[in-house]
Length: 264
Length: 193
Image (cartoon, rainbow over all chains, first blue to last red; front, side):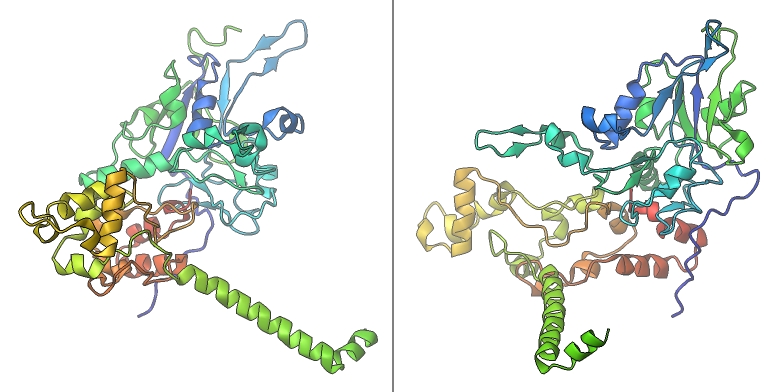
């Protein structure tokens, strides 16, 4: 029996393709409350690194809420809050630079994957990411003693290990990681849809950030379905893509400049 | 360099190099063997007797049909049958506990203490692999395809070296005529996230 050939692990980007999963972020609605950041860290076992490591610039979060300033002091104007996570680029700059193919493009899900067990920690991908959304595990933060309390025998107890999400790998030291669009939830929804003999429909998958957003500013869904909410929002005239001129074809749309937008 | 070559001509050095090489190979072999021997279980559960009585796999491992983990039965599930078996617990003609088979005495002990049986999982994958039983059962695979014929075994043993090559060989062979499905099934993100 001839075994089918494994395709090469590289992004085969076709111009004009919509992608499969996408996010739309309405910056006119975002209040900068950081609920998405907290929810993301809890869903995806992103560790808290503590004060000392943060001082070295090693703090870990798969998304951050950015706020920029425009103009010269004192006539500064703030831009709207802008949550930034991995843009799941269709043509991703992080992928071709990985020497061990640990960051590859998923052809079926159209996402950028980070394969933790392949990653050797060269950090090329993070250096090549124009959105600066990749974070590196500088130590085994999950078993850092700052998370532990000694019990009566002096043995360290890690109470936070009880809130780990079992569907997500706890990353080890020396591994790069980034937003996955909550691929564990995508898989769960696809599995559920398949057991009911149907396609995944809009609303089946909600990543942790979109679920936690109290203002409903983060909308997730199928980009290849023109009727889905996220497709309509990404076609909106308020929608822009971050650093679109680099040709990375990001899957996250930012909406701003509505009638009440840009108040700052 | 010449000094090293001169050293290598000494028989003592040659013998110690051979011994070091053999120790390395032996150690690697022993380490691999350790991953292939079944771990000791709290109760020497005889699968062959239970399968011989035509008890379905899914009666004790029901999770295989609907979730990621197949599950290992609690002591209450064992006792649901064993507490009623006429042979040992007929109220009219009770057999004292000391005369029960030793493994059943252990089970009775667990039930009396209300203590969970700490079964040791045999088929394990590393935590960066997310295996899900449900789609495999839904795709029509039998349990014995991966776990072997349990009607011939007592405690569960590893029938198959569980590695990625084995997973992918089956995923590719079964989707040879369906490129869309094959793309999905051999994608890294299907198991690693």
